[in-house]
Length: 72
Image (cartoon, rainbow, N blue to C red):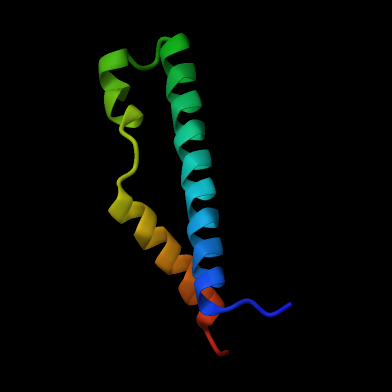
């Protein structure tokens, strides 16, 4: 089944979201482990809890789409 460009872009956006969600959760887990081990304080890791922006998500999707659209 051939997908049209809209379907491919939608799929790349979904993949980018899943990737960034996984990265976010892994960063949170790592930061919480560092706090539990006494290596970092909650204040040290507050920036870790900042969710990615829509611009960052779109940039990741564009990066993934450019890989798909390459002709080589």
